[in-house]
Structures are given as structure tokens and as C-alpha cells.
Length: 102
Image: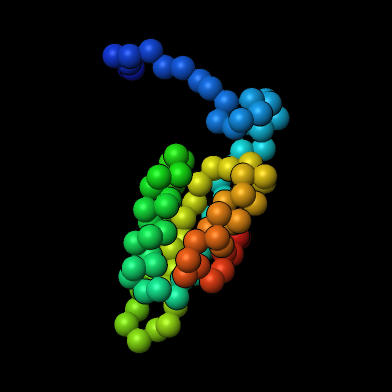
């Protein structure tokens, strides 16, 4: 079996530093982001994740009627530094109460 591509593929370092050690440190990291804004908060988080430029390996949402908090769980490949930046950016969003990596 052979696989052919109709366009050439290229590889670029995904971080600004371009350091090959960044590639070695990149691994799937799961985060749960908790919001108090219900469906509106979840939709704002989904939009932010969609525009962040990273492929989501996993994405799930938990919104329940009568519960004060909603959450988004997602997995993306990141370095430890990128994971810290992700947490800072998520916490800076209105309505985000917590970011839990695990």
C-alpha cells in the first residue's frame, strides 16, 4: 500500500524559539476550564480554543441546568511553557474561574 500526497508537506517549529528541544517537550496536555457563565461562557471558550491555532485532540463540554458552573475539557499538544501561557490566557478571559491541568 502506498500513500501519495497531492501537495508537498513541510515542517516548521511550532514555537517562536524554533529550538529543537521544544519539539521533544511537546506532548498532549489535558486541561479543564471552569466558567460561571453557563452556555455563553462555554461558547466563548470554544471560540477562543478554535482561534488559538492548535489542533484539539479532545474536546468535551459539561453544561447542566441548575448548576452554577460549566466546564470545557480539552487536550492539545504543548510544551510546559506553552501550557503555562495557555492557563494564563484562559484565566484572563471574563467568566473563567479556574483552569485545572491534569
